[in-house]
Length: 166
Image 1 (cartoon, rainbow, N blue to C red):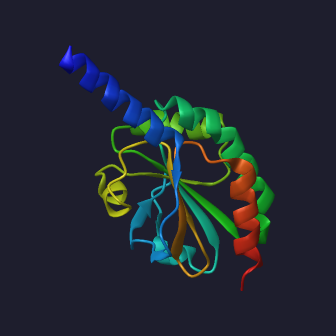
Image 2 (image 1 turned 30 degrees about the vertical axis):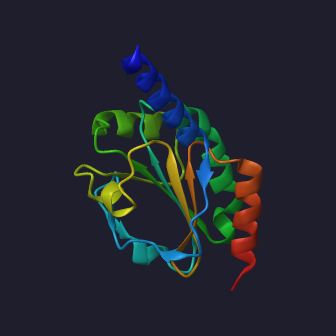
């Protein structure tokens, strides 16, 4: 009986964590990482400076990730011309062929990276739950971390505020 209660308690904590978002106290610099994109090119965190960026850790096997992806695309389409960037980082356990297939069949307009070694997820706070997204301001500072699907109306307001800052 105690084991069952522990399992139910652990499941409740995981569900609560996945559905919540967390505000990072103050701002902290985004970790210096290199994203290996699907075309083999590389982009670094430093390349995002001067832009408002969302670094989104996801997996093709993650139901919430797949469900939120059309909203991620529309967010990118809405703000990209104004200086917004999006990097989708596929988790190390996601087979690269699945990521390529998903990206091509859904025509994802933003950059997609594969974190083969798990080093990028580790650098960004040892990301384990997907989706996890980090909103980064023009100075390269993490403004907010979302675990689970963001409230997109709130995310859009924050993106607009950050884009308006010089």
